[in-house]
Image (cartoon, rainbow, N blue to C red; front, side, top):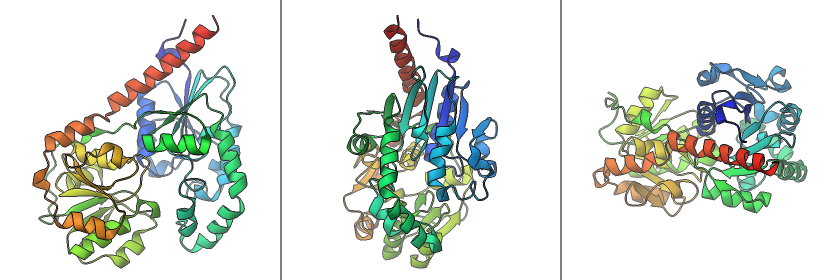
Length: 382
């Protein structure tokens, strides 16, 4: 007889907890779905992650190494050993949330291991050439390129082997499902990430310093997000663009920005919600595995102008909740932004679309999957 969900001993495992992003928000949703779960990660930076303050975060030996909390990217090989060193023999279920090494944990045959793949490791597979061109380490880029090329074959072998360890794979989008099949040679079901749609339902006052009409981008400013396209497009059109976020691309983006592009850094939740709610549209030019930010914008009743590939092509309904741009170029985005009319889009339709990706739906599907898999195991041993 299968045990009740609340009686299961559950561990949730994430690659690292050093910066808050979409994947980390999904981990929080997993923890709310399984409040009895223990949380594991390679390194944890409490000062940057106040959302996890109430959880007992179990870290690896990397936590004690100098620079590990600030620059976990410098320790890819050690991260593999870190996850392999954890002992999960006491758990009924282990759920790994993985973009890198977390999927490589080792569990006993009696423990159900479900791996939620945000994407097969980008810098080994789908985006290897992009990372080789711009690793995102500034003056350390030459060293990062050398390390990536020198270790590529062995890294791919380990990553492929690690992806075979889980009993069950989930991809966070159809885009990722296809990558899992291509690179890991395994089938995967799709479970779209949870999005905190409710937080964008609260009406915020228009920011006092906001232009009359402006576009907005929200995210970490890192190379693959391609916010250079948004900045260049707004600059070409002499349109107002608000950039919310920090990252390694900040200096480069400022250098190519026109006078109507403003960089406001890391915003509070209230400021972010206000700027998104009152924008003409959210600009989303990157090829994302899923992309939580466009769904958040739709939850706020704000249309999205996004590149027509990756997760955004699965969430944004062209002509109803925004515009899907066929080419990932500044010229193509500038052409759409130039003639864009926010009044052509109905807020209620955008909000309804966003609700299809709510946290409640995500948690129902995840707990239902665990229940079914545990029940199937119980039947197989009867």
